[in-house]
Image (tube, rainbow, N blue to C red; front, side):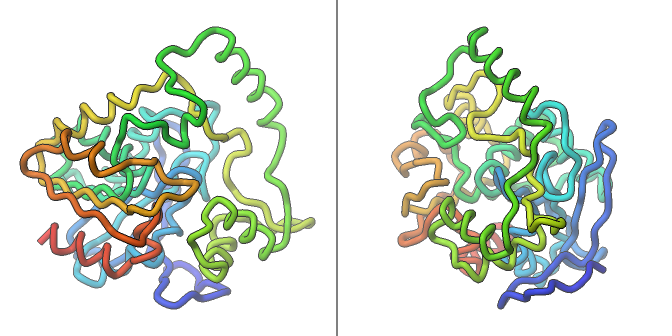
Length: 303
């Protein structure tokens, strides 16, 4: 059992179990909401987030009999920092966490980057997934925050050199310190639709307190832009190839962290058996802004 949270938030609940998983030499922090006797479900958080951001959503699934398994992506939360980051490594981490619980196929539920990540994992390991719910992580041919200036079809030598030069110095740095309230306010500039009370709840989970204040645990080398070539069509081709039941949930209110996906971007690529739900008045963090509504959609879909 994890320790109680020092600053409770209505409806939020910390995981019932936490453990470490060795993923090819890297330590990954894994979590579980629900009983060991429940049906396993793999849940993935978004980029620059951590599993604790699911504290208001995951318990709603666990209360209906699911054994909700999640993890902090490498470089995020309490998982170990790595030399380099890519989606293939994140896929291996997710599979290592799932293997630590079961070798069976389970439903996948992912938000934002986590939705795209599990979409890719289902593509390479279709034997391990029974159904997929993607929460505002649907791919689009539009520019997304991970590639802010342009679509990168090639990664030229000058760009590679610039990113490697950045990493040579960034790995020696650390996140900017501040009070608990300051870190919450800083995050609210990126997540303007989320309340300060919720963000202050997240700080003691996703940040560590040091002699000069709180610092987010996120690897300081991480920044928007990814590492390597990117084509949005790669995600769309995975989407159309999904062979298991698929639920797509899209918040229609744009905010700084949204992928900019529109219903018309997704609909032509959806497999015939997919279900697609759009939510008016909800932004990118659909599972935080409307946890009950989104959980009910997922539970009905999985039933």
